Image (cartoon, rainbow, N blue to C red; front, top):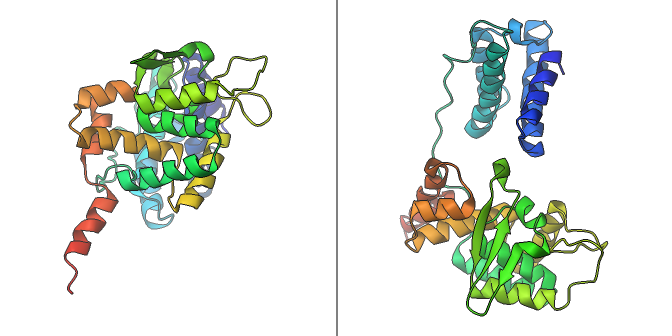
Amino acid sequence: MSDDVTRFLAELGREDRAARTIEAYGSDLRAFAEWFASSVSETFAAATITPTDVRDYRSHLQTVAGASPSTINRRLAALRRFCQWAKASGLVSEVSTDRVKNVAAQELAPRSLSKRDVEKFVRAVERHGERRDLAVVLVLRHTGIRVGELCALRLGDVSIGERKGSLTVRSGKGSKFRVVPLNVDARRAIRDYLAVRPVVAHDSLFVGQRGDGIQPRGVELLMARYGRLAGVEATPHVLRHSFARHSLDAGASLVDVAAALGHRSLTTTAKYTKPSMADLERLVERLETT
């Protein structure tokens, strides 16, 4: 990792960017640095990058690495952010990525589950799981919060009454604070779980197997286990996508869904209005000859 990249990542840290975001930038810039060293035979630094290098790297990702458009565009975005920082820091006079366009890609909605598959998945948790697992799944299903936000919840972040309830997300992406309502299914599942929640020294809402707060990896593993039982490929993020898609299909507005998901831009939420790969598969299946 070059000194310039190290300084750039440190600046992202001072901007209070999420640890995963900083890690992703580092990974993408490291990939470019490795290609740069092997192709240009120079040490990677902000001042050594040219527009031709960026275009050649894009071509390499397309034709040699066989990367998907989303991966290519993400790596170009990381490089753009780095080059913009380099100019602002006085390391370069021009941004080498300014005239390099993204790869055009087919715009599809993120993968989500049908309502029927979600019901199969929830049923598997109801049959084979414990109260904690059902509460975890139903909170993700009915709020659309991120797995990291779920794991960060504290007991004081939950408010449950007779007719309504809410979760306070204090550590959302970009350190955004928001309050998310809970429907009756989520409220009931949380109430049932709290009745048997282990007595521990910390106040994490969901307690892990070792008595500490549940971690994202633990949530992913428990969902994979119930997914296998249900014959459904489910992850925390897929449930988030499913919440968004089902909400919009039911007539919810982009503004409301964006607020629930914690999106900064309606453009991010609008991707759920596009057809998914499953939608296209159903389309072509209707055209099959009999």
